Image (cartoon, rainbow, N blue to C red):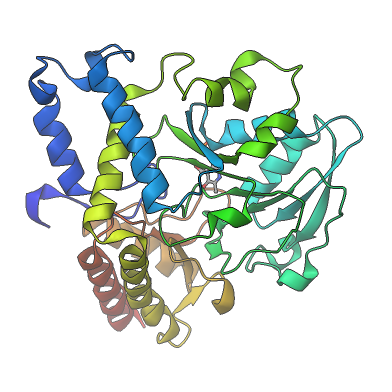
Length: 363
Ligand code: PLP
């Protein structure tokens, strides 16, 4: 690849757009004539505030976030949201429904048990998390505090294609691994949260999109830093935010805009994933996909090579050929190609060609 860039299929942190990295490199010593980088400036300075507010405005515009939602930049990763959501919205004895579609949903459920009485609304664990449950299988209660889903399951390679209608019960989604990969109707959700390190920027920033009326109902007897209202009331500037990460996030959003927005990005993501899924599907069982076809993720393509020894060889040869990050998550093994927004089509095409060659040589 040009510019010594690897074919980066890491699951997270993952590839960032080359154009964004180059711009950041240019600005790192002297940001817009200030004689210092954005990292070295006060978070109360006019320069930084402009970066902060334009990142929020860009996200609002790109993701079509309605006026009655707050956009927050927090820290602690998506993992802290597993805790903050129930800490703010569940109380002892109160129910919430969790749809289990993988390890991240299990972790979210575990945290909710510390605050209330969450229940499993559906689970595909028995099917090794190969699929997303049918919408008709998802049971929730009218008195649930919320219903929680994981829109894309990074480890198993499955993705929701449509979301349940939950009426007056707020729908909460962990979108860490597919936010901004496609247009989403934000108005269907009470809360959307995502760690930045896949599609949004470097790790260290967590985006939370929360409907304003929920803020009024949140629990108040909890620590200041863990209240959504603290951050909503201060435009995510209650304390020092991760300024460099937010700057990078803003630049990634600008890049998505320049690419033509979410429709264009989605179209590209479909094409990128297709070249790899096609190799799997046409391999006569040499490669097998983990996810069932109707639940396949456009972001994380999980597959096995027919024979365990050959799989090891495949991963070793791929590594030697310059493909990075193809090992499956340590909890499930196998292979995984993460094809987030910043992974170029050429990288996916190169991987597809490599897979075809490998099959030809070893079948
Ligand atoms: N949720 C999903 C879907 C993920 O893929 C990850 C992985 O990073 C997490 C949550 C955990 O995020 P973080 O590392 O930001 O806490």
